[in-house]
Length: 229
Ligand SMILES: C[S@@+](CC[C@H](N)C(=O)[O-])C[C@H]1O[C@@H](n2cnc3c(N)ncnc32)[C@H](O)[C@@H]1O
Image (cartoon, rainbow, N blue to C red; front, side):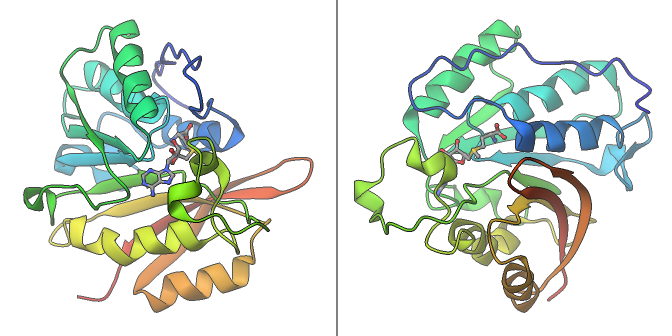
């Protein structure tokens, strides 16, 4: 049970080709509603969270949720970053920030994974959240042929390619001197055993912390730490 009246951000998803919050989004938000209090963010001391990234932010709902929590919890004061490959998503986040009376506070980046991140963000994030595109695509779409909306769901031929590409770089952006977590979604529509093997081979320890069953798939919230120092 959550102890706060956690905010539900006001979200307008009427921007063309921007992913409307769905079961996977709410799996993440519901997890945090039960895992944040005055003292702890999951099992990390709340005042230790300095930089938080919502990668593949879409409408911005997750980043805005955390920004609104900052108003509720005094000791929770991280800089919040939100990024997306889609320019339209970034426009959508800006509009949703205004709707929630947040103006400058969230740092926005339009970037393919970490490609356009400045170097000063390396080694900085305690928390990274990525609800990636995770569905396998039988048709191979080259990067420059992808439409904006494909980026929301098309995880590559096996479904885990975008997630694995992300994890190959994510460790450089984690603050490995402090306790850190990556939270990401996976789906039973991909080969979960193979996905977990790839995650482990990259040096991450993975724990499934929440899951939900939909009509045709299970979706999992994974919590990763980087082990290879
Ligand atoms: C499943 S949606 C999740 C959106 C939002 N975080 C949520 O939970 O509602 C995936 C998001 O990742 C973005 N995305 C896909 N590939 C990306 C990449 N290579 N770099 C950055 N963002 C990417 C998409 O544009 C989309 O907004």
